[in-house]
Amino acid sequence: MENSGGIGASLSGRYATALFELARDSKKIEAVEASLGKLRAALDQSDDFRTLTTSPVLSRADAAKGVEAAAGSLGLDDITTKFLGVLATNRRLNQLTGVIRNFRALAARHRGETTAEVTSAHPLDDDQVAQLKSQLKQRLGRDVSVELNVDSTILGGLVVRIGSQMIDSSIRTRLNSLAHAMKG
Image 1 (tube, rainbow, N blue to C red):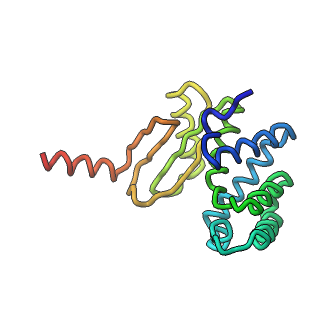
Image 2 (tube, rainbow, N blue to C red; image 1 turned 135 degrees about the horizontal axis):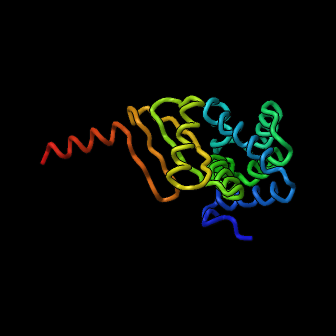
């Protein structure tokens, strides 16, 4: 069954598709998705881990040792841990962010959900996320999983991307539109 929806066109998409198929066949999609969530948090919070995944000067062996140690300390599942080793061996750790994003999209599609990438100026609390999911479900007529990002440069409001559709209610965009209109 083709489940990638064009994701496989990129390098990170091909890795994500391979990881997804392995997780699906092992019936461990949720475990892998949880581990990838931990990795995403580590990438966001740790400069050292981000450097480990992006540094071209680290040898393959050192990168493999580094991700193995990180996987142990993060408590990742076996599939994700082995997958990180493959990425390190193939010098593809720099694709990890894209792999995580694409895997989440594949997992959401597998569950019959739509994935929305939501960018806000400040972190959203659980009630705000639940309300946003509810509004998106009403608008789209199906369940929506959200990937949350924070970008303080939008000043306020939200930017929501669902596939090729974008809903931009950010203050930055509104101010830019107002400035453009005033120029005449």
